[in-house]
Image 1 (cartoon, one colour):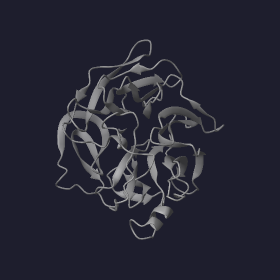
Image 2: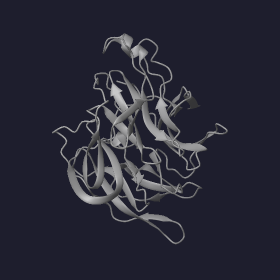
Image 3: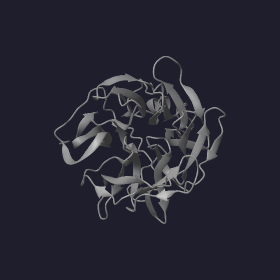
Length: 339
């Protein structure tokens, strides 16, 4: 189990943390819709919305959601800007890799090779393996930003290296380091609309390392705390027009979805669920989708709310409504929406 990322989202929703499962050894080179994953029907949604349940990537299209990709080891999907390819994470025994699939869920290629030939569950395998998480596409579709270990675990006992931000080329070229700090780990990130920088989640090391949102300038390499984002914010996503950042923001023991103008300003709270995260805005900018835990229930379900831009440019959201019940969606994998 990775010493930094222990999942606690179901209780506090303060740290969006991932489980590093040393026993997970399923491949993900073939889409699979098993009998345990029946279709879900409900409201009609525009475009194609991805979410993850039990290591299978689902797609909500029209009025129906059904499994699209994965056989129990696929997580954290991200659509490319054109809605033609999906970057996603495949977890295996003691490591994870970044894969690409086409829009139909057919795997195309693997962008990383973080595994080991040592026997499964052995210390040698752990020592040679690395992890990658949270793929995010550049606006031109030529690169994928990933939170990744660039060094294998070290020490006695073995301790995982912090996650750094790497830019992986989609095609020829070598991976480029974008940000690294031995004292903090990178979480979910999103490119700014012009491609010159990213909004990045950074977390201090140790079990109480609190996550914050930062702005990373790829030209200068400067990293600055995101002005206006409440302390402890995470799960950043950008509106289709690039003008608004939506994210999960904890306050007084509750976590809800807030929005912040990318050019600066005061945050606006969009939901009042008290246990919400993983926001994403529809391609037409009219809907907010997010994951939340209903009172008295153990897991995350899918919710939506209508968005409105006021005459002065302010963003507001209508009453949230629930689309699924008891589905147990993987909150750390987030949501991805394409036309």
